[in-house]
Image (tube, rainbow, N blue to C red; front, side):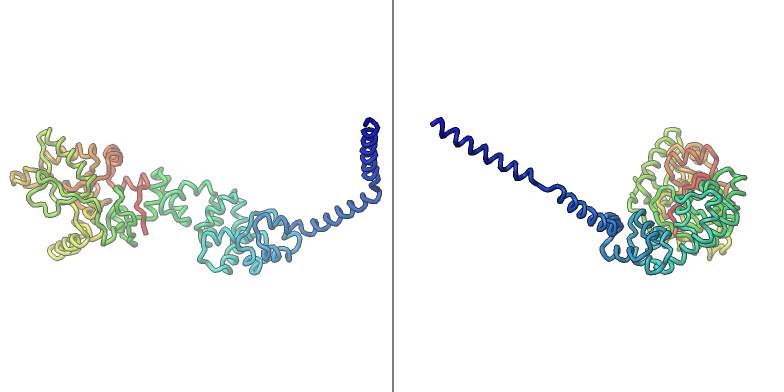
Length: 416
């Protein structure tokens, strides 16, 4: 038995030894050249296709890769080192200036309805005649594209001619209504008022001061905003009616009020104010509140027919420019006037109380006697406008009318 085990053990050892002999007989001197040859071939393949691999990793399709690889090596290099250009085949077909392909793409993103040929023509022109000169004034690429989003060629020519840097322009550009070619006017007015909002808004919308003629009428696009200024030049849509009109308690409505509804937020503020006034033995009533566009049109026409166009122009708001249509502009009276004990609200103790305290509840006297040139409406001590306590308090402290508030704070409606 012992001999048999030894025999078998010896057999296994011989088998293992044989396997080692076979593996050990690999001819590395022959194999190494083969491997080297394969590596060289793979290297050559990769060398010829490295650009394609780079383009593929950026997301270019096979056909786009083919179009790019037909370019010269220096142009291919530019594209492989930049982000993917979505409309690359379009720009290759239209322009040989590969360094501007990314700029074509950006501009097309801002103006997607623009014809591709016009995009190329515009950018070629801008980057040849204006961009280099603006860079000498210190514009960075980011700043240049901030301008190129909305500037016209004449705007760029103006900036080049006057050598305005981006920092010169930046505080004005942040204001609604900014126009590049009014920079000289902005700077002049800023030196007088020391306020960027004022400089831009007054220059762009001079009729905000009603002593200036309205040359263009803008339609308010967000009519429900509490801080919209409404007047000639800044008008409400003819079909606008607030969605939150409420009917006041009869205790707060005068006997002659044919338009008692007003916006909920204004009514709630009025109730607080009326209660505070009553605690001081002053009794306020709502005399006229929301009026629709058509109702204001009727009132204006009646005044125009009775007193003439010139009188109506300074004593009544034209349709669409009446604060009554906002549901935030209200006419106030007193019990003493309502009961005929006093003829004119402006002579009552209630008016004196209102003038001194209404801002605490978010209201301002909209048409003061010393602000007629700005408001365009003669003295109306009874007409108040709800703007909220923050804005009303600021106007009270600064002795501003609503026009001045807009000019100094930049609080313009969305206009079209």
